[in-house]
Length: 282
Image 1 (cartoon, rainbow, N blue to C red):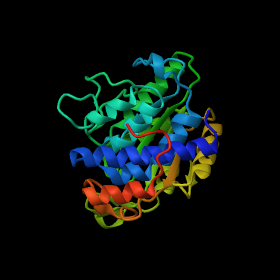
Image 2 (image 1 turned 90 degrees about the horizontal axis):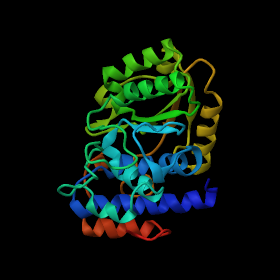
Image 3 (image 1 turned 135 degrees about the vertical axis):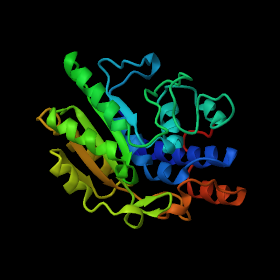
Image 4 (image 1 turned 90 degrees about the vertical axis):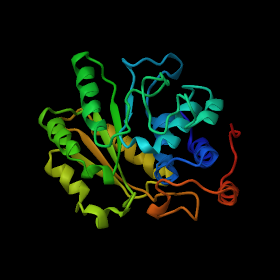
């Protein structure tokens, strides 16, 4: 379990990995990846119990994570590699022909750490519920985590899954919503306003909490630990995590325009100038 200083160091390197990967192939999704960096680093380097060196699809007696908004694969791949699932050097293959690091995570290439193909939004919670129920049936007391974008909640399958999880007391599930208020076409309120996400989950029978500073490592850890403490009490747990799209790179921060475009050479240099190299670039 890394301490807070180490987590900050990993987060800085993760952000460098993200912008370098997307720049190298001029394709990918840097905005949401940068915004969720603290969450991924805290989850994999502080919260979850797993064995990266002996990955299998079952994940028995391990905490499991399912990325539902799969387009933010750059942050996912960076954190998986630096957690020991596969060599960091493989980040060089991001989005290239025949790579295991596809633009959206897939399973048929056999990339360690990835248990679900998540190119289509809205499906991750359903899969996670199945995994969580399997753990209950097997007497496995480990937890299942998911991440979703707030724009993704406009997919109807999410709410069917949310209803099912509460009705069946899937209380070993923690679902985090990246509430950055942005999606590919603009703000979530402009595209399809959803009102209070937290109140919606409460109405569906979930226990909820919020992380007001989703780009502050200490706040993210505090929120994840509070959510873990609420598991096993008859309700699934939802975290509403407020982040800034593009966090950590000033010209990308807070705008939907960096949802899915790559930085130029000059923009990459600018971004890297803001991010300390702490673990060594791949």
